[in-house]
Image 1 (cartoon, helix red, strand yellow):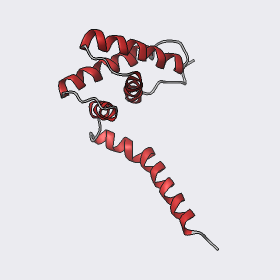
Image 2 (cartoon, one colour):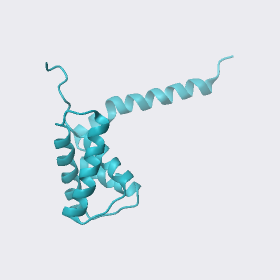
Image 3 (cartoon, one colour):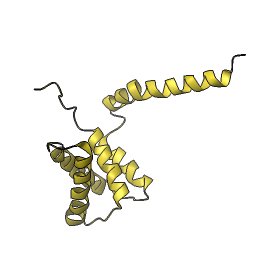
Length: 123
């Protein structure tokens, strides 16, 4: 006998994959999502709430840090650790904000997702 719960589960999983693959880029292109709202949501996830001006400053700082560490010739894990270390010090020094490490890791991951794709075809 055929189980419809299995079919429903497969359809839901396929819908999620299709939404992530095609729906999210379309929504980002149309302007429904930007780095500021994503970083704000990431900070709210950890219980931090800031004004929009501070969120924009954090987002700009994180994007610049991630953009510069992307140029390093190192493994992705090393780049991420370096970006987290630099971001932690920069947030304290420039914005006088102390955020826990897991929140900074999340913000760095969000900033990395907004980087332009690298061209791996170059020799």
